[in-house]
Length: 198
Image (cartoon, rainbow, N blue to C red; front, top):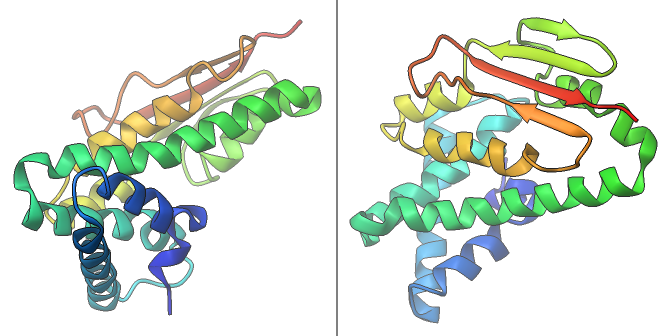
């Protein structure tokens, strides 16, 4: 059984409650969190996804649960509040990468390859694969497909923005690019990462 508390690498409870407390009382925040947990369980049970589908179980479904509950509480601000929650996680990931890239020269030099294997996940067409430059195209997005199925494709605008938040300006010697997205109606998401060298 997957627990929502493990989502966003275990940060979901604190990140969510931190943002909710800016908009709601302590009692309302606790009540909303309980509703989110129930909604997540309902989604996970109804979709019956395999445990190996970590993107869905640890990122997409928790996100949908948060957004669904927020829409019932505050339709007008639901997406804005969700963005704030999700951006906390993205900013933490960005800050971690910045620190590690500045502290670890070998990680910096190998980052295009790391980006290809972690973000590309080995299941997308590879366009360029060199030690200093990698490019791959995502032609099928699990995030977009599942949010469409669950009637909230607008969440993908946030997921796409997080990619930019995490990887833009992480180091002066690294250049990240993605100017097409499936969400925007393009044929693919065209990710690339270049190490500029010495």
